[in-house]
Amino acid sequence: MRIASCPLLDNPLYEIRHLEESDANAWFEYVSDPDAMKLTSADVEDVEQLRKRIRRANSDEPGTLIHYAIGTRQDGRLIGTVGFHTITQADRSAEITYDLSPGFWGRGIATAACTAAVDWAFSHLDWLCIRAAVFERNLASIKVLERCGFAFEGIFRKYRMINGRYSDFRMYSRFR
Ligand SMILES: CC(C)(COP(=O)(O)OP(=O)(O)OC[C@H]1O[C@@H](n2cnc3c(N)ncnc32)[C@H](O)[C@@H]1OP(=O)(O)O)[C@@H](O)C(=O)NCCC(=O)NCCS
Image (cartoon, rainbow, N blue to C red; front, side):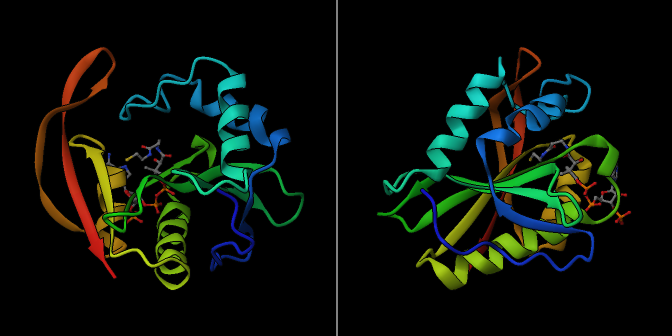
């Protein structure tokens, strides 16, 4: 579901912008790297899967997916993404997702992107709650969520598959 506005990223070098189909290769480059994604349940088989996801994110149909690129301000190159899936209008809730190319880890970009996306969602959409599910060993992502004001709700055991094993996830939520 494409919405005209984008979350505002408080960073001089990077911005949050709409995803374009031409971003698919740069995105695939790191989400297909098993080492980069080893603490996530991401399971992207080919670049076409990402193109389809971008088309869904850009469709005018109200749907269940909102997804943005994090790109350099200088040349627009995609270095990450942030968005929402499992959007449930009846419950006014959604789940946040984000990923970054490993070369850009550890600079506070995910914390800034998560903060911007949550602030944007609560001011543009009538959601009550944004949730996050994070593999219990993904300490960087746990830190991002806690710094973005998400509260720990508990553990869902064997919630999603990581590297072929059903794994325990920490559940977080933030209310408007
Ligand atoms: C999780 C991810 C988005 C974090 O991005 P990032 O831009 O590096 O995050 P930030 O820099 O905003 O914050 C990460 C914090 O975790 C810390 N951290 C990183 N690895 C850590 C580890 N193994 N143990 C403890 N803390 C860790 C960093 O030092 C940083 O804290 P600091 O700012 O106090 O130094 C990135 O690692 C990523 O894309 N991973 C793959 C996809 C993924 O896991 N997505 C989330 C799924 S729930």
